[in-house]
Image 1: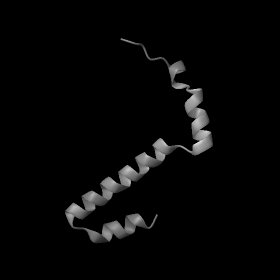
Image 2: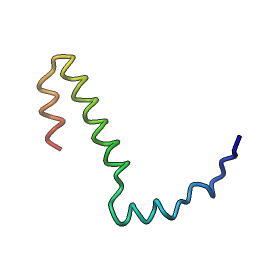
Image 3: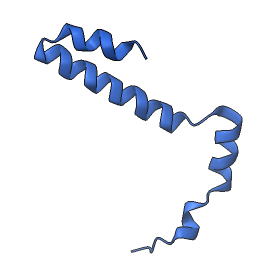
Length: 56
């Protein structure tokens, strides 16, 4: 088993990629959350809520 220390959280390669290409992980997380919200509203049959949410 490997230990995890706060120093392990600093990943220079990842930081460089984020600066170069943007934070794709954060963007995907946001899109996934919106998709889940839309699916929930669609299944609940509440089309008004979908319009309110997509106006971001």
